[in-house]
Amino acid sequence: MLKTALNHYINNFRGFTREIWILAIITFINRAGTMVLPFLSKYLKEDLHFSYNQVGWIMVSFGLGSMLGSWVGGKLSDKIGFYKIMIFSLFTSGVSLFFVQYITSFWGLCIALFLLMTIADMFRPAMFVSLGAYAKPENRTRALTLVRLAVNLGFAAGPALGGLIIMGMGYSGLFWVDGASCIISISIFALLVKEKKKTEHNDKTESAAEIKSVFHDKIFWVFLFVSFITAMIFFQLFTTLPLYHNEKFGLSEFQTGLLMTLNGLLIFSLEMPTVGFMERKGFPKIKIIIAGSFLMAFSFVLLLINIWAGILVIAMICISIGEILTFPFSNAFALSRAPRGQEGRYMALYTMSFSLAHIVSSKVGFGIIAVFHYQFNWLFMACSGFVATLCCFWIKKALTRERIS
Picture: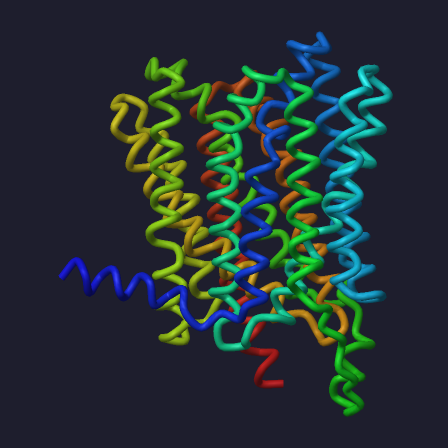
């Protein structure tokens, strides 16, 4: 029985091209090496002695750079190809990290981190486009899920490694290791993966699709709103919820860490089999996103029950399953929506919605808590999630009308 279940699980990882596995490996190396991020605000506050307000503005500069980088990376991926953008982005940001550690002034760091993230996040839309190029059409969603799995494993390993490096080498060690991981991962990619040239298509249908601008795609803009909302409420896991655990229920950092580990274990064990099953059965992506966004919203309804600490576990399971259903299929929907030749622009806007959500999530969450306390924040996040779910129903109807016409 156990052997059969294990074989079924392993089968979900079969059928990928060599290039997809290499992309997953370099993504893991890069994300595991991105250990500056979890400690950045701590570094700015405790090592450089900036005020909370200054730390906030530096993090806003960080987020704005991420948004600009996502757009520029997508645009250039369409113009000159994803391969060149990926190599430029990771190599240049790796070298830049070596020098950022020597900048210690407020304005200097605002500018430096803005420029660093502009370069670094050019990689994300280019990487999504590369998955579209190297993955087989029948397992594209699973390929996106494999890379997401590599990202999650990398993020799980990164903070622990980062803590050890800070103990042994201080904060400067983080910048050296992070920069080196960027250079090593993209060097592996450049050595083992050849650039896939665009094929020319001359038929009239595709020419018309290429002329159509992403800014005229109403369905995609409503989808971007859904992506922004689901990302905003998901990021509460890393901003307001850890404080709530302690202030309301007296949970220690270790107990909060165990809840986060539960999220990681559920993603690791369930996401790929779930995506594989949904892909084999041919479920429409938008229907799966509807279910996922509803579950994410409902998890915040559960948090309104604030008289029992066990509800935190149930809410974490609920939001984790919602994440499994929402994010892989959102990635796939965005990529499938793009006309040929505009994949970069579409994936740029998709990744920008996450960058914006990252900025807004903590600002809105903590702002609501400061004035109205935690319960109102959970209610606001739940209502936002249900609005996103309703928007998904609109997208489903619009797609039906689009197919008929």
